Length: 207
Image 1 (cartoon, one colour):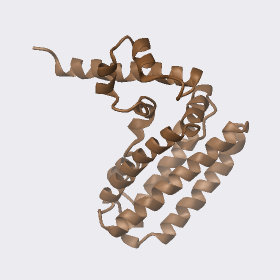
Image 2 (tube, helix red, strand yellow):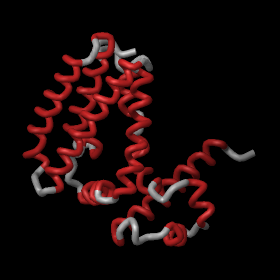
Image 3 (cartoon, helix red, strand yellow):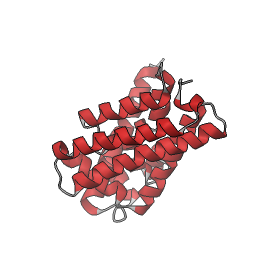
């Protein structure tokens, strides 16, 4: 009998390998200039096999950030204190270590990936669905009612705008060391506004 753990690891390696090949091709030639058939050929698999792993061409790229989907919900669910405070700490820690999800990374591969992502309309649209799922997961953790959904929408918008502003400045040629103080200050202001403006039962103890 085969090992379920081994099967899962092989499946995970397939995801990673095919996504890496696709992203490399898209970066070299442009997303629209590379066909799914070309990706499948480069990965030495059939198109039907590729589509079993990645239902849409855009998913080949979005797989790179799939592990961040629901991250805000996980942070809040695991927090012992205030939800907004837990997210503030998490984002600031990300800024400190240069986590690409905060936009504060000047690694060439990260910059190239973000340029591909934000420069391709179909990828931006597909990324929006990831954002919506993350927002829904956060709302559920916050209680699931209308107030929770409104709060989740505000929180996810803040995280997205902060990250985009950091990426925009880094992509324009500014150094991480120069951007970081402003990024920290902006995050502190934004999370301060969130804490002050959300209903007490949402900006208070995490559920």
